Length: 536
Image 1 (cartoon, helix red, strand yellow):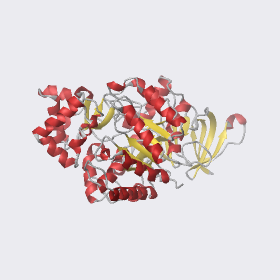
Image 2 (cartoon, one colour):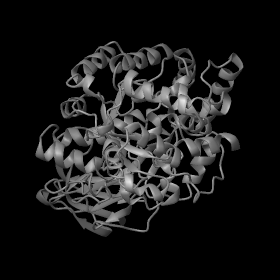
Image 3 (spheres, helix red, strand yellow):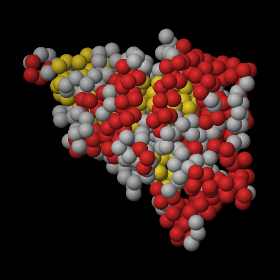
Image 4 (cartoon, one colour):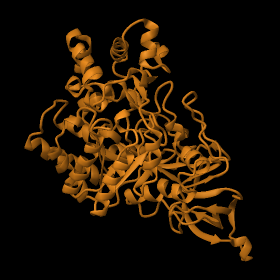
C-alpha cells in the first residue's frame, strides 16, 4: 500500500502540454505512478493508505518562487504560511546581492543593519552560522517549504573590500573568487547582485565578469538586480547580457520590469533585446511579479556616494545639513542612481513599514501626504524617517505600467518571482498573493496566459534554471512537491489595503509528499530543506 493516491485530478504537469485526468500515487515522498483516465478505462485503480478526491481540482507541480526575501522569515517562523498557502514549495533566497552568508562578525552586523527593512534586524534569530554551508544546514533543521540560496555579491564585497567605492585589488578579487567558489561547493545555486544597492553597486563590470566566470564553471547562474530599472534600463539589461556572455555564465534577470514614466510601453524593446541574445545562443531567463508597484527600502533611493562606508556613514551624512542638501538635490533634481536615474516623485513613494513602532503613523501614506499633513517639504519628511528609523523604513514605489507587466510575462524565458518582503505593517501584497494572482487574474480573468502555459512558467522553467533533475514536473519518480487548486476560484486574498490575507482556492499543498496545507489549513509539518546545487 502506497502512502497517498490523488484521484481524478486534472493534471497540468508543468510541461505546457494539455491537462489530462489521472490518479497520481505518492509514496516515500515521490510520485510512484500516474494512471491516466483510470475510471474511464475500467482498470483496477491504485490503492493507498490515504485517498484524496480531486474531482474539479488541478494537480500541478509546486510553484517555485525565483525571487524571495525569506532569508530570516524561514528561521523566525518555519511554518511560513505566507508562501505555503500560495502553493509555493521552493524559494530562492540570497537575492539582490545582500544576505547573511558568507560573513564574519563585522560583516554580519553591517548586513543586518543594511537590510533591516527587508528582513528585520534579527533580534529573535540565533546567527550561529557564518558560511553558506552553515546557513543551509540551519535551514535543514526544518522549514515548511524548500529553499535554494544565491551567494550575495554585495555581502562578499563587504567582507573582502568593505563599503568603499573603489576597485578591488587583485588580491581582493582572488579572495572574492575563492569565497564564491566555496559557496557554490557548499550548495549555493548561483550568485546574485544588487547593482543599485551598496556595496555591490561599486563593483565594475570587470570584477563582476570574473566572479561570473567562477559561477559558470560550477554550473550556477548569475541573478543581477541590475544598474537601472528607470532611465537607462535597456542599457543596463544589455550590460548584463554582454557581461554574462563574456563570462560564459547563464543569466537570470531579477524582477525584470520596465518602470517609471520614461519606460511606459517599452517592454517590447526589452523583449527584442532578449530575443536577439537568445537567438545568438545566450542562456537567459527572467522573473517578474504580477503587480505594477515595486517595493524596497527608503534608504535604497539615496545616491551611491551618500551610502559609501555603510549604514553609520549614511546616517552621519543625513544629519549634516550641507550634505543632506546635496542628497536632496540628487534625489529631486538630478535623479540619483539609487532611484534609477529618475528624479524622485514623492507622491509615488508609500511607506509600507517602519522598524520603530513609534513611527507607525507614516505607514500607508505617501511621503508627500505625510509632508502635507506636517506642513513641510517631502524631503524633510523623508530625511526625518531615514534618521529616526535608522534606515529601516520600507516603501512601495508606484511607478510600474500594466502593459509592460503583461508583455513580459508572456515571454518564453519568463518565470515567477514574488520579490516578497514579509516585514512591515503594510507590506506589498505580492508577498502573500503572487502565485494565485497569476492563476486567477492573468489566466482566468484576463487570458494573458493559458493555464498550461502559466503553470509551466511557475514550475518546470524555474526548475530547469535551477538544474533540478526531479522537480518541476508531475512525472513518475519525481519528488512529490505538488499543489491542488480550483481553477474556477483560485485568487489572492492579499490586497494593498489588507496585504496579509491568505489566498482562496488552494486546498492542498504537499512538500516531499507531506501536506503543509490540508483542506485549506496549515498543518504542523516542516518537510522543507535546503536544495543544493547539483554538481556538474
